[in-house]
Image (cartoon, rainbow, N blue to C red; front, side):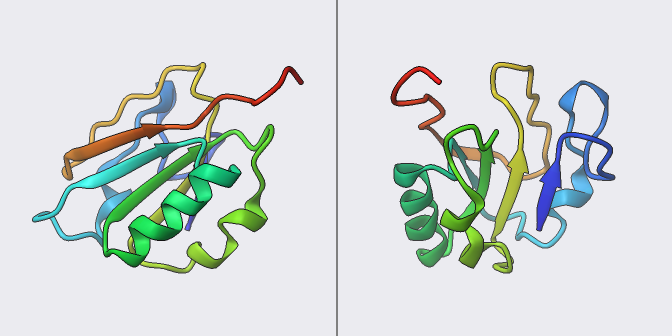
Length: 111
């Protein structure tokens, strides 16, 4: 499922996600956040983590990453994509704690 930081029902003002976004995930597990997850390295990490059964929240503003890199993951029950620029505030307030954060959200060269 794609969650957009615009007017999506899973998003609140000030970039607060509500609990319904992760109702499909088991509360006994932790989630992994991959910032820049639609880029080359981040998307490969997302594919690996999903294949290992991890619950993955992928955040990317798609300035250098692309949806094609994660298109095969969008239907997976343990994967969520959020189009968001991490230079803006993001508050993670979910029932499922984050077990790890991987930050690949950095352009390799100036745009």
